Image 1: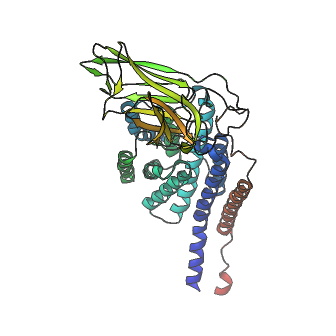
Image 2 (image 1 turned 180 degrees about the vertical axis):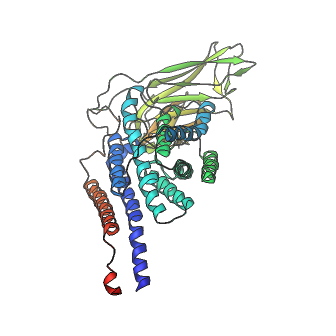
Length: 200
Length: 261
């Protein structure tokens, strides 16, 4: 009886994490479906995806804390690390151009930033909190969030992006642990994404 | 906790080392929108503002070798780019410079059906020295040609018609990283380059091409509605779980006093 109750409690504790992952998968499917052939270029699909993630994160118990200068600085430093290699590659590799019209930057940035923040709210916010509360080791939590982060990008960017996105997920998870909140990884993620406009 | 950051940094370095060049995806976000494709001869129903650009650039010759350089057309991203490394060209004696040019042209020879249908423009890639005489590519030092096709072309192959030749042929083509509709080939011959597809690309009338990609094309998909319902249901279940968990925590402790009496 007691073991049945314990198993039931375990299942109940695991449910929010499983639901968050299922929600993430559904939101990704929604983004891919709405984007169609436009893929990662579709701003409406990106915006819808961001809204879905924020909704899931809020339902999962995540609440935006008060922004702090400390986490913003930690996030900026985190973004600098993320951008070192792309910047060097940008300077050294063939000057192939795959960029976008400059006039589209404001709209693009207005979609990219919330999407990055929404991903962090769900992964390094809600999912992180749920798994830590469940008693999972911090390193394992970082790993789960990193794998989920990488997996959600596969339908849009292909398997080729998987190793890099896992690595980025671990780095952002490290920032989350180090800073104690979701602000630092969200700042780092958003800045790195915004920089991609010039570094592609 | 610091070791997680260190692990992340090490993994980042390793992943970047293994990432395939030349244009690996960055971390996330949306790829910026592309300028609508500009056709030399727009298909029926396709409205565009402006004409596809031609481009040219000079390569200097020093110590008997042509310099490295690149040229790209003015669209964003460019519809045609060409890059050469140092010593790529052989040129007539006395030359001090080479002009590398990209020009959208009508196909000088029809593309055979076996290679597919032309998608976008044919680009004539030429190199001319500042003195009379032929300029050709040196074996083992190929030129890189990048073409962007109309939206939805994907990783369609490039076909080439050699300068002075009469037959189009397919050349080895690779996608430009994760960038949509851009493909690359390394060529040892100058000439005409074009993207070909298995079937005719059908741009949406009046849309002016790709733009930001506003959807999947043919009406709002039922699958998207189903997925929205799933997302909402999951969010609802999460919220319900939270409410239950809060209520459980707020419930009064079991009354054990009576039993003790």
